[in-house]
Image 1 (tube, helix red, strand yellow):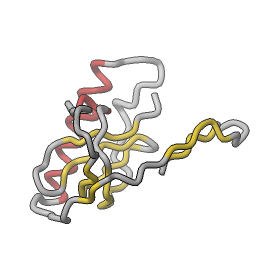
Image 2 (cartoon, one colour; image 1 turned 90 degrees about the vertical axis):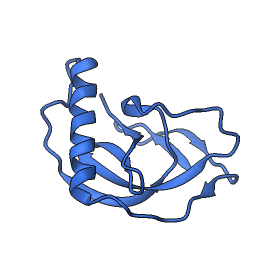
Image 3 (spheres, helix red, strand yellow; image 1 turned 180 degrees about the vertical axis):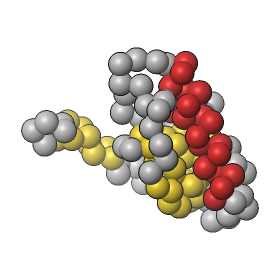
Length: 117
């Protein structure tokens, strides 16, 4: 389920849901420190490449958690939208303020994330 809410006045901007998401078996095969390094490198590289007035390149990592995520193309993840049924994967979600980069807990690849540029 996804909700988009206007941060100024709290108005609901959009709502979506999917019931056809498959959930991959949880596997944690990379260390948290490896996920942090991978996320920091991708976060800094992305913000150098897409520099704007709100660039987050200088933000420090603020926290890390394990969550299931459905990959997306954020942070140049190379996500392939041709998949018929999306697969939720267990990932380290590495936060840089509100922005976050998702690193696959099993393979160490960037799966996407959220950026509020």
